[in-house]
Length: 183
Image (cartoon, rainbow, N blue to C red):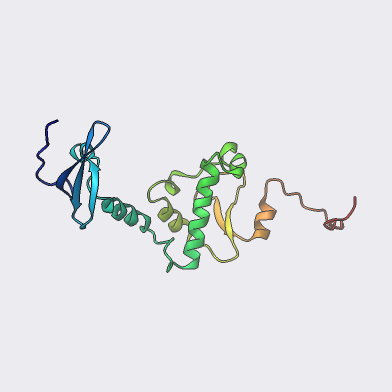
């Protein structure tokens, strides 16, 4: 088997030496990353541009992406963290068939507008809705409508109950049935 003479730099990786090990037919090499870490990597992944660092580059990129709005950082305001939680749950109940409440939202045809989805979706949502006040949650004004600007608001539980699709107001003069009372 011919030894490979490898010189130069591959992204942040500098080849140190051939380990003599293989993963299947692929040689494994020891590389030193610009961050100082040594790592054994499949040579073909480096040659064909699939590996550019020891993993530090991915952490930098995804870390920057995660912090674009700052809502999940420990020093974010409570209203910002609450808004982010509401936004994330809205996306989930409309797009994730594994969620228990998907049947009443996504499967029922309720969608989230394009402006509030994908990259930058939370930032747009925050611009339209603002931070979530304490004691409120996300409510659709038209409960049969989609999640979109103009149809959403921060509302208290009482307002949301009165706005539910299956809510029936008790006629005045009728006594509500106490919980646990016999029919």
